[in-house]
Structure formats: structure tokens, C-alpha cells
Image (cartoon, rainbow, N blue to C red; front, top):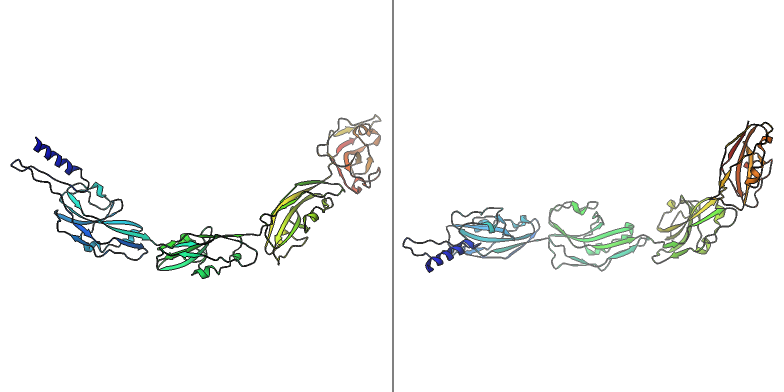
Length: 476
């Protein structure tokens, strides 16, 4: 019984081993033959380290110690680092003829395998874990396939002001401890990796004037590459490269435009009524202010330049009432010497040179508002019977102006009457005016208005005023 138990234990071990199988059998006499462990020998050589750069990389100097080799069939096996079978070269000569550069970056293992007929799973695309049968594997030799390495850039980041003065980087160094590759250069790109320049060495990088590129962001890289790389041209994108190459980390160069600061205050709203209207309480946050020269700019809402007050006290001395109804914008401007186009009457778009504008503050200049009349129209018969209007109302939500009155005109705007209030208007007898058409208006105005008299024409009014809509009174 103990002898049978030993036989079963040995057979169980044979079935469960992953890489080394055993076999056992009873002889004809009932005795037990010891299990053969299969031996694939010992490989020597390497480890091997290559750079994936488009140049053929072969191993050499591999030997197989076959002194204890067993098994009927022999082969070599190349796998990745997860035991997936990549190749089955039959001899050492075949192993040493494999181009490992073509496999790309990663690690390969070279084994020798010895096995008996009937082994299953030994095929490219399979895995060593799936082999079924009697076999043995040697130790493995490692082949490490490293990618190209462009080194590590140190320095920066850099930040400049685009103001017409040259801006160059300095103090950049390249840590080349792991650097490899046949060819080297530096690459300057924008944020989208479009190639702006290809300085061949650090002294050329540090000679680049980044001010000339205008506002934006540049990236500085070191590039290592194998012969045959295509797409390495100004105007191309790094994504256009084809061939063996590697890029280092990048150093950022930020090119800021001139900063005119931030103005706060307002917005302002005035009524154009002949009374001076000045802004007040405006402040300038100069935290990020840059630029050699400073001024304020007042424009209309189309950015046409109306005035150039040099300081805040001058801005707050401007009478916006004199500009009439409309919208003004107040800006702060910073600029460098040589700016052209900064003249009243020009548009901001005519400015040419290095400058920056702040945010704007709006100044709205409203005309007088006489409100809206509601009621009518009215239609009377001229028959000697008094005819009066009634039910007229004035919507005064937006009403402005120091003085108010009603105006009755004919349809040619000749002034027929000036009732001061609705009660006076509704007391007018339109029958007495005879056949024709009258127009009823509400008028708002400031002191000094000329031409507001019966017998004059409303078109001749001179001063600050506004007329409402009119209500028609027809006298048939």
C-alpha cells in the first residue's frame, strides 16, 4: 500500500509542474522506474541591452552547456516579459540572426527548450504557461530594448514682455547621462507642437529673440533621432515625424503682451441736459502693469478716439454732457516708444506698435425723455358744439428733464397751444379750431430753450428738449 501511495504521489507531482514535467510507469515486474526530469541545459551570454533606433541589433556569444541535456527534440524560444512566444529559432545561429531592434521597446527572454514528441502549445502567439507535455526549459537570457533617450533639459520656465526689446533665455543645461542616438538638435514649438525653429545647439537656443514671436507660449525641447527621420522641418508638427526619435522634457517660454492694468468704477449714466456731467471714483489696479508710457483713452462705442486725458484727474475733469447722446468708453493704455496712430479722430485699430489696453468703463449719455402719451386718437365733427379730449395718460417711467408742458400743433408742427398740464389739455375746445388735424405732444426741456411760443414751429426749438409721441385729433 505504501509503495502504491508513493507511485501516486510521484505521478501527481508530474502532472502539476508548470515548466518541468515528470513521467512514471510500473515495470512488468511490478517495480517502479524513477521519474525522468527533462533537462534543457544551461544558456550563457548577455544580458544584452540595445537602443531601438532603426539600426539592426543582434545578440552574439551565446553558448549552451549541454553536458546534462536530455530530451529527444531541441529548440530555442524567444518570449516577451509575459512569456508570450515571439519566435522559435531552431539553432543558436538562428537566434543570433534575429534583429531585436525591429521588436520595438521592451524586454525579450531567450530560452532553450528540450521536449518529447506530443508537446502541445509550442507555437508563435502561444505562451509558455500553456505548454502541455513532457519538456524542460533552460534558464533565460535577457534582451532589453531601450528607446532613444533625448536627455533631460534643466532651466526656466521663462516669462517675457513683448515690448520690442530682445528677450533671450539663458542658463539652460542638458543632462546627457542617458542620452543616446546618432543625431541631436533642439526644437522650438508653439503650444500645439508646431515647429517654429531648429537651433542645432544650446548657444543657438540662447541666441533666439523670443520677443519677435509676439504674445504666446513657446516650448523648447531636445531631440535625438536616427538617420532617416522625416518631417523635421519648420512649419511641420512634431506629430509629422516618422522614424526613430525621442524628445526630452520641454521648457516653457511665456511671452506676455503689455498689460495696461485693470480700471474699476462706474458704469456711469448721464442725461444730456446742458448740465456738466463728470465721472468720479475711478481707480487703476497697477499690480500687473507693464510698459514705458501710460495714458487714458476715451472712445465712442465704435472705438473711435475722442480724447486722450493723460491721468485720472484729467479723465474726471471731462464734461461728458458736451458729447451729446451716445456711449463713451474709458480705457487705460500702456505703450512703448514708437507707437503710431494715437491721435484723436483715429480708431484704436489704427494703433501700430507695442501697446496694451485695459478693460473699459462705459459712460452712457442719454437724451431727455418726454415719456409716452397714451389715449385717442380722437375724431370730432366741427358743428359748433364743444369737443374736448379725455382719457389721455402720460407714461413717465423714463421721464427726465427739469421742465414739462404739453404742446398742440397742426400737422405741420406749427404751435397752436401750450397747455401746462393734462387738466388744461382736456379743457381745450377743438371744435373752435375748425376743420383740420391737431397733434398733441408732451414736451420736456431744460432752462434756456428758445422758440417755445405759440405761432412758432416745433422744428425751430433750440436747446435741450425732447418731444413724446403724438396723439392725433381729427376735426371733420
